[in-house]
Image (tube, rainbow, N blue to C red):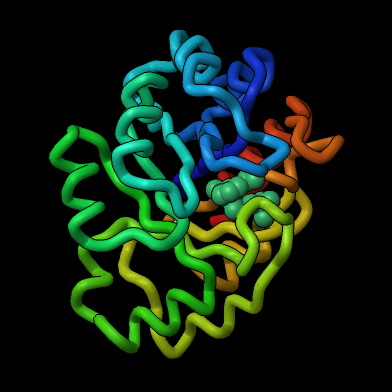
Length: 204
Ligand SMILES: O=C(O)c1ccccc1NCC(=O)[C@H](O)[C@H](O)COP(=O)(O)O
């Protein structure tokens, strides 16, 4: 089970995520989030991250030139885009050398899979609740009619207490969490991160 801890902003909680065995650490560069950090801050946080761990820059409805500039400045290896992007945008991000994650809300996913069932398979998908980073759950049974391709990531209101049950029900390739490992909104908690990774790993 692939585990991503998103919205990190401090060395101590990046370290907690790595010690716990997280596969990916995320840094929010989308404006307007309590977790938004400057790429220069992320660059410092990424310094000690082993190359085997994905370092993910998270963007929402930002121009691709800005995405590429910030991702390069931060030194992340992967870019996660949350809406408004075209296939050409994804191509540009990949040509610049970044891995990509296409984040869609459950509603966007269901619309897109109907519209372009083949094209959607070209992406590593993250399927999320309508409002990213809000700690909202969604009904994963809505995916049963259109199961996503292998390796898809599930997010939306996960926490150490519900993650195992959600994994068993929805069978994602990985999980992504933000609010559920925070003691205070926007501030990660090392103990919750450890509990989340352990619960996700024990789920299968
Ligand atoms: O976390 C944010 O504040 C955020 C803001 C804008 C775009 C994306 C954002 N987060 C993306 C993530 O990958 C979150 O981990 C995911 O949405 C799950 O969040 P949560 O339901 O709080 O666990």
